[in-house]
Image 1 (cartoon, rainbow over the protein chains, first blue to last red):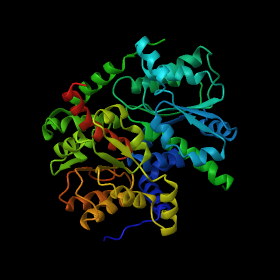
Image 2 (cartoon, rainbow over the protein chains, first blue to last red; image 1 turned 135 degrees about the horizontal axis):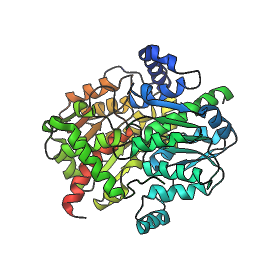
Image 3 (cartoon, one colour; image 1 turned 120 degrees about the vertical axis):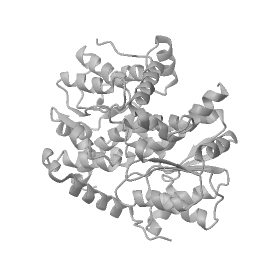
Image 4 (cartoon, one colour; image 1 turned 30 degrees about the horizontal axis):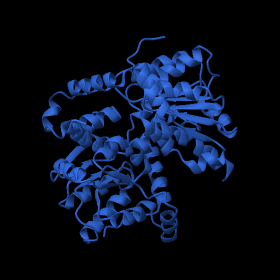
Length: 215
Length: 215
C-alpha cells in the first residue's frame, strides 16, 4: 500500500501553501479579505484562471460579513449549493440556506408559464425579507430575475450577490449586465463558474469569520 | 427588461451546439458514446481543457450502461454528487446513489483512527455487493482506498469508477495510480475534477440511455 497523507487538515494546509506559491505576483491583485476567497476557489477548481476572472464590486466581503453575523438567510439557485455549504459553520452564525427550484409548486408554475424554475424560485425567495445573500451558480435567468426585482424595488438591496452562473447561453452576459447595479457583488467574468465555485466563495468569507471568532 | 431565452430546453440545446462547434477537430478523439460525455463535462465547467484531460479506460460506458440497466447502487464520495444526480432519471432505472461521509458513526470512526471520513465511508460502501459504480470527485484517499479494496479482493470488480478528485495534494497521483487496475474507469488527468464533473460524467451516460429508452 502506497503511503499518502491521510489527515484532512494537513491536506488542506499543504494545498493552500501550493496555491499561494503558484499564484506568485497575482496575489498582489487581492487584499487580506479577498485573497482567502480566490485561494478557496482555486482549491475547489484547480483552475488558476479564476484569479484573472474573479471580480469584487461594492465592498462585498464586509457587507456579507455583517449580514452573516446578523444571522441572515441565503438563497441558492441550486440544491447542490445548499448541500455543499457547511451546515456546521452556518449554524454557528444562525444562518441558513435554501433553494426552491425543486419545490413541486415552483416546478408546476414554471411549466405553466413556460419559464425556468430558477425564475419562479427567485421570486419566491425575494418574498422573505431576511434573505440578504444570493448565491447563483447555475442559471443566468435567476441573475436576470434578481436584477429586475432589485431595480423594481420588489426586494431590498441584498448584502451580497455571488453571481457565477456557468455556461454558454446568457451566462457571461447576465454576469456583466448585473454590474449596472450598485450592489455588493462577487462575480467570475466570462463563461466559467458553477455550484462548487459559488460554495467556495461563500466559504472563503465564512471561514475567515469562523477563525476570527475562535470557534 | 432585457430579452433572454427563458425556456430551459432551448438553452441546453443551443449550449451543446456551441460546444460542438468550438470543440472542432477535437471531436475526433471521441466516439458516439464518449462524445456526449465530454460535451456534458464542458457544459458543466465551461472549460474546454477537459477534452484533453479526460480519459476512458477498459470500455467504461458499456459496462456502466449494463450495471445501470440492472438497477445498481452508486457510491459517491460527496453529498454534493448525490444531490446533483437526477433522481428522476436514476429512478427510471431503479438505481440509487449514496454517500456516507456525513454519517455520524463514520465521522466518529475517522476521528478515532485519524484518517479521512472518505476512507471510512468507502469501506462501508464496499460492504454492499450491489454497489457497482463509484463516483469520486473530491478525495484522493477515497480513490486510493477503493484501489486497495479491489486489489485485496475485498469487493468485486466495479462496473465503473469515475475517478475525478480535484486538488493539489495527491489528486493527480491517485488518479494515475488507479490506472494500474483492469477496471472500467473514466478519469481526468492532472489536478482538475470535482463533484460537478463527476455528476456530469454519469449524466452523460444516463441521458444517452434515457433517450434510447424513449422515456
